[in-house]
Amino acid sequence: MNNNQQITVTSPLLPDLDEFHELLKEIWNNKWITNNGSFHCRLEAALCEYLKVPYISLFTNGTLPLITALQALRITGEVITTPYSFVATTHSLWWNGIKPVFVDIDPATGNLDPDKIEAAITSKTTAIMPVHVYGKPCDTKRIQEIADKYGLKVIYDAAHAFGVEVNGKSILNAGDMSTLSFHATKVYNTIEGGALVMHDEQTKKRIDYLKNFGFAGETEVVAPGINSKMDEVRAAYGLLNLKQVDRAIEARHQVAIKYREALRNVEGITFFDDIPGVKHNYSYFPIFVDAEKYGMTRDELYFKMKEHNVLGRRYFYPLISTFSTYRGLASAHPDNLPEAVKMAESVICLPMYHTLNDVDIEKVIEQIV
Ligand code: T4K
Image (cartoon, rainbow, N blue to C red; front, side):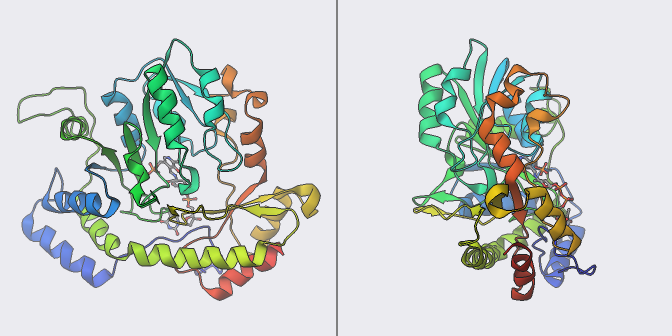
């Protein structure tokens, strides 16, 4: 609970201030504060090891890696994606002049439904951009089979999927590239920050050029790049947070266990259970309200919670496909997206963070049962 007595949907993982101060002194001594500094390099190496990925490139947020991945893979035309995500996913396509084609989700996961992808492929389709929403793994095998069949690239928006593994392997290695967000509201944060995960050194090099204006040396510009480099202060902060992220994820796991215990038999309330073989990160705890069975609509519950200082969030409502930029697209029609519409209209993400204590958890539960 914060100072206003409000229980917010999340609260950031913060490094120990004294330890951070020590690293700041080092940065001050180095007088090297951005542009591929030593903390930047150390954090990339540490994240490769922690996340079990071969190559990673750090960014200033989780939106620019999406935009940059599309540039690097020279994606054009149409890209198949999900409407059930944060707007940044689709905006990254728009910023590249690409037409988003929305495909419905699988209600069992909230992720792009592989069974519906093929029908949306046209001669202009060049890629698929799925999202591991709430950190729940997409069906990466099926998606790759479809991509291979039609010669499409796959870029995963893995903003929610920090540390998620399937049978001991990182899901960040799926597809051609995966992006991460290290925003303050995420399981692992560098205040603002993000990353791109790739398979080979050549691609890493290309991405590193692209995030630094396209410079490949003092005087050579090899591509129309952008500026999206993570600075030394955030990289140092990130190194410290990496030391404690496992503990934070375990604390979140305990919160999920308590929510599930209390809500399992509440008529009209459902939620996702853990999937065997998956290492979850408990980034969000969405519940779904069936108004008829529960006797109250999602919004009635949401506002009742708010009145009592329990600030859940309706992630991801409204659907991206309903925003003015996208609603004119044929694929944005609600008839094309019935499962996504249903999920968006029934979801509330409950407060979920590492320092949520038993008293606060009880206050949240009290509003629902
Ligand atoms: N792809 C996906 C699938 C994403 O979900 C996102 C971001 C992206 C891409 C893009 O990544 P970034 O470019 O953002 O790195 C938040 C975040 O701003 C956004 O990062 C996130 N997804 C999205 C799902 O949620 P808001 O507008 O809901 O956040 P805000 O400011 O209302 O904060 C929510 C609560 O968190 C506050 O009520 C209290 C707590 N909070 C927040 C901040 C910023 C704190 O306690 N301290 C803080 O400093 O968007």
